[in-house]
Image 1 (spheres, helix red, strand yellow):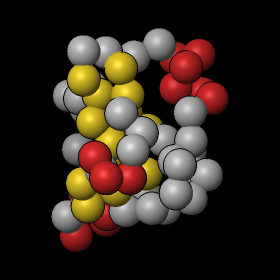
Image 2: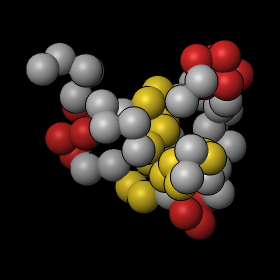
Image 3: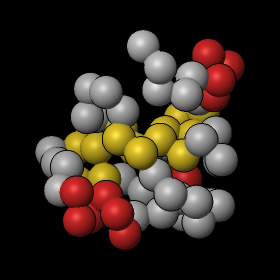
Length: 64
């Protein structure tokens, strides 16, 4: 994912910043509690396509 693009994308629900997951397959909105898929390099920022984060994902602060 292009860093410049990631810097301007926000969650369409909360308008909060998005972060790329470790696998590079989803954009995470911690505030919204959802993850948006990236398909063929294109973020799909549709509420109907988002999945709800698990409790563990919501609590994870990127520490591994």
